[in-house]
Image (cartoon, rainbow, N blue to C red; front, side, top):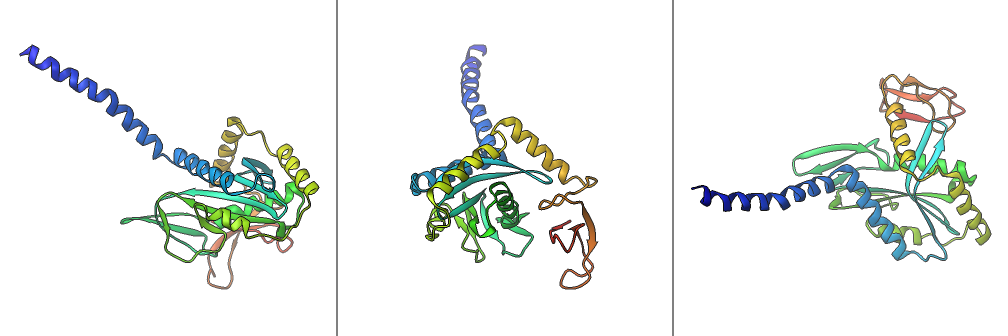
Length: 258
């Protein structure tokens, strides 16, 4: 009896020796951390493949200091035709959203998830680039790139693209706004002005995000650094609803949803 069981035990051990690592690998690849990195690697490849290296200069995982802490940009492209701040979203399912909505919707079969409007998320990135490089707003462009098995179910603005569409959007800008010397200076400014691209910087940024969104944390305006105060809308579609507004209003008109 024991001799008959031993081959089964060996077979089970042999099977588990590759099944368990495979299950762990699948779990890692499906984690938000891995999906985010895979999406960024894919977009990085598309940018390298589709853009002329002599004209477009990419920097990746750029973390910049802001009045209320820091902000992290997946990809920044500096060129004669402008500066492009690229936000990557590796998502599945149907995507619903509009330019004005605070939150967009992801539907996977019967499950529904809400996530921050990436256009609003990238707005802070463009403002950080303007401040760091001292360039006008019209020279900085926000680009949102979705990768993965997602499908847009509502009409999206031109700067919200899927996959390689980000390259076509960048190439659609054909009017030079900088000369070659200015581009070189901007690239150098960004390299020296960014926080060190290390794990320590990433960990500090994530911790700062957690503290910034904690209920009892004093909020700082992402644009001017002043204190954000709780206000109540008096008119319009959001009348009666509370929101965070900059204490220096109307000098600074930054508002944030609660």
